[in-house]
Length: 311
Image 1 (tube, rainbow, N blue to C red):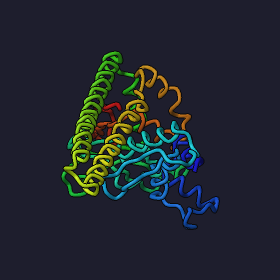
Image 2 (cartoon, rainbow, N blue to C red; image 1 turned 180 degrees about the vertical axis):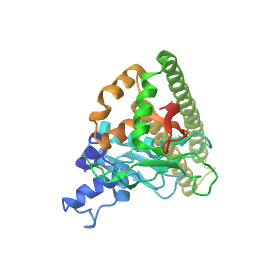
Image 3 (spheres, rainbow, N blue to C red; image 1 turned 30 degrees about the vertical axis):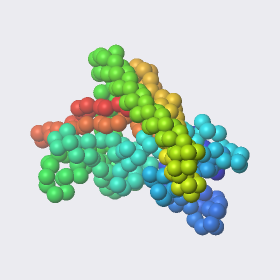
Image 4 (cartoon, rainbow, N blue to C red; image 1 turned 180 degrees about the horizontal axis):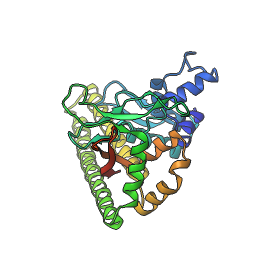
């Protein structure tokens, strides 16, 4: 199981790629079956591997996790990193999962209508091309003629992204905006944590009331046990939610100084593999608004970046 987390977190492989790798090595699941991306997902979010036990999995209002009696087989740091990465990718996960070369999928949007751009790969017309396909992105509303935006070449999109980073005039201002967003997120977490802590105090008060009623013989043992069990389940569920919020708050590290990010992008982009590019983009960027303007007398347009939302 440690290798699954390592491939997903440290090697930047997608869930489907991890499943393919395990199947290629003839490593079966615990049910002696083939691995799928769904099986990988279930493994990644299974807290049993860090020494915890899950209860009431199919009853959301009563579901909670607690420390078990078995030893952990992976570190909490690796498990938490997988949850953060999984959460980030779920927010931008496209309906059709991208292959390695569609690393912009789920991140690029049309400047005309605001809809998402989807991959449109066609066989390459260049005989000397190393890639069998031309990788393009087209507005999802173009198919029903609701948008007439031109498709965008992936290569031109990369060049436009480099040009955008090269021409950012006020990086410090962007850093300030990014930091303000992170501070607002931290305030939101603090409010949610405080609300849950208040609920715990209410449960403690209710617990004392139920105990007093039982001691004064106003409740029989069966009624007391049922009420006590319900309170304990509610408390366990709230504690698990608190743990998740605190864990996410501590593991969700800021994307860092934009000057450093932009420098890394410029210096390292062309040396990254497709999987590494996908991982870099999903960690740093939330949304790219792109346009491709028609040029008179030319078949292809001029691609430029209108706006970027950073994580």
